[in-house]
Image (cartoon, rainbow, N blue to C red; front, side, top):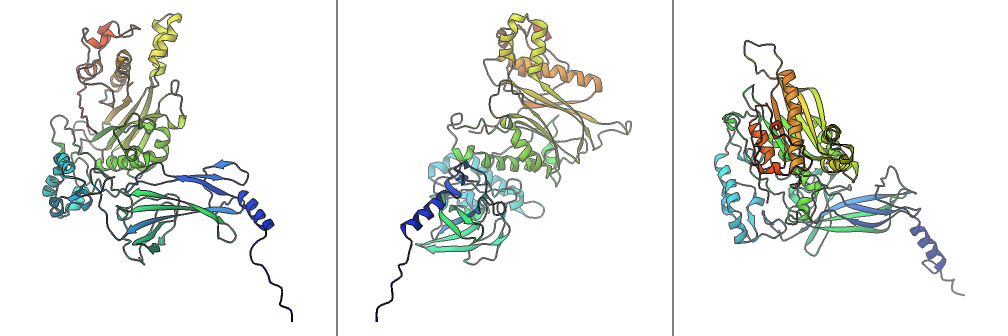
Length: 541
């Protein structure tokens, strides 16, 4: 009896050709990478994913299961690679492995991540700042005995809104929320070679938690068939560096006004208990467009990345609980997509003035400006004024210069700087029995003056222009003034003298630079506003 014919398993060359053509004509992942080389606790990680569509076009748009492309979508997963050997990282140089631990921190119950250092020299160099933690720990027992909340409640190193779920067990029942993914139980994907892979996220974006410190994260992106739900083709993965804790913010202090010891008047909610006083925060947050490695070569790239900085900025701003917040260098897109909605959650109303773009040549969505926020329970918005120094420059040149000189003058004066002036009404009572029904108004100016040191005349002209505008508002409403901003000026400079003294000495050396004669006569460089300068510079190096 003849043997039955044998059936050859596999694919013919024609089958393989068909499969190759099909794979080349479907959705595929070409590249994945992270914008920052080191992941930070509390700071979102959103990989850059480059795709090729079936029509051969390239895109970075997400392709979700609810909106597949040609029957395919992308599936994301994040894993924590947890070694059996725990690795501690330096609290000062978080990219370095720790070699020693401060036992004083352990005794004082300071979070353990802040106790590690990479070398004796590191510990010695950081001691002046490090001992502040010890001093605060020794005096921070609040009336409830909760040292941890008092010490780190405002600036918790794990970030705002981050869930710190324990994943130490192989079958943890803890559910996590990360990115936009629904709740799901953490699971162990696999274990080999002394390493355990915990699945910690199922969305494109992942926010590292305190449990991730010292561990490498793995991102996986695969193309999935929408009908079969099976993975199609090879996946793309990347490994991060070890996750590091967010560094502690620099210690700050409140500046007392009129000799008041405001630190002693803070109530349990961080507000000033006196009904007639309020707190103000002014902060140049450094636009992401300017935070380049070329400008800040001494700063590691992860510390310059916007996902890292924005979480730190928000945590610090919210932590101060100021009644009025004036920010400079706020990008238009960051205001709309981040600061306005995030601070709204904390009870702030937002106002914004974007810089003009006659000089700026970049994306108009990333141009920066001035943003003013105020607590809705403390103030209400009455009126808003916008100052565009470009328009003021046009009016000035039209008034004092002949047509032949206007172009050169405008090239020097037009720098896109702006100011935002807001009139607020206080909701708290600051009046005596004699004026029980009088409205308490406050005018808040927020500006960012031109930075170029070779344009001292332009800098002084901008400050003088702003003060003259404020004088008109003050005269019309008998209203107190609060002038905030980044004036890019040092004590002793002409703009500082004008603000602090109300005038500029005609012999001041800054007045020697005035090619357009816009500062003459020098006697006009004055104002009648009774301003008192409060300045606090932070050395961030």
